Amino acid sequence: MKVRHLLRGYEAGNRNFAGVDLHSVHLERSTLIGVDFTGANLMGSVFSRSFLSKTVFDRASLNWVDLTFAKLNNSRFVACDLTKASLDGIFAVDTDLSAAKLSGTQLRGANLCGASLRDANLRGANLTGVNLRGADLSGADLRWANLSGARMSGARLDGVLLEETIFTGAWLNGVNWSGADLSHLKFEEAKLSGANLERTNLAQTNLRYAMLHGALLREANLTGVDFTGASLEAADLRETNLSQATFDRANLERAQLTGTY
Image (cartoon, rainbow, N blue to C red; front, side):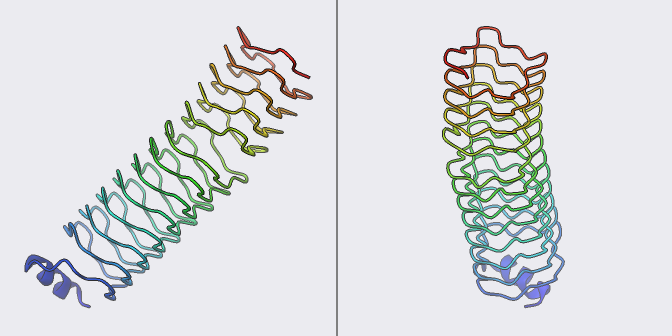
């Protein structure tokens, strides 16, 4: 389909463009609200700074697409392929990205507040400074992803896959990671106040200068954890394994340490 045919159809009231082939087209700064692109081929196309609210991209091919700073709130990307896409600065509040392929995608500074990323593949994605407050990432693959400075308070993280994932400076206050394997990850300067980390495996994890006020760490494996300069005020560390852990300049005021070994 030609771009002019799409735009003429949209102006005439047509919103159904399911299955169309629009690969490598330029539609930057376009307004295409409420359009159905289900199963469409949009590979390599440019939609930067476009208004695409309430648009459906389910099962669409969006590899290498440029959606930087696009407005995508309340849109759907269920099971679509966004591999290597550029999504920096998108406004995607309450957007459904369940089971989407986002490996290697650029999402720096994106607003995904309240979005669903259940079972999404985010391997190696750059999520630096992303807003994921209240988002659902249950079952998402976050291996090798960079979430430095991400705002994730209130996010659901049940069953996420983590390996060499970076959370440096991330906001994770109140998250529930009970029983999770968080070993060898980077949480330097992360905000984890009130987080539930009971029975987690945090072996060899970097928590330097992290904020863990009132965090629950009971029965966690803290072998070799680096808590240098961390604030553990009023944290619950009962019955934890602290062998070879480092607490240089850490604040342990009112922390519960009964049964540690």
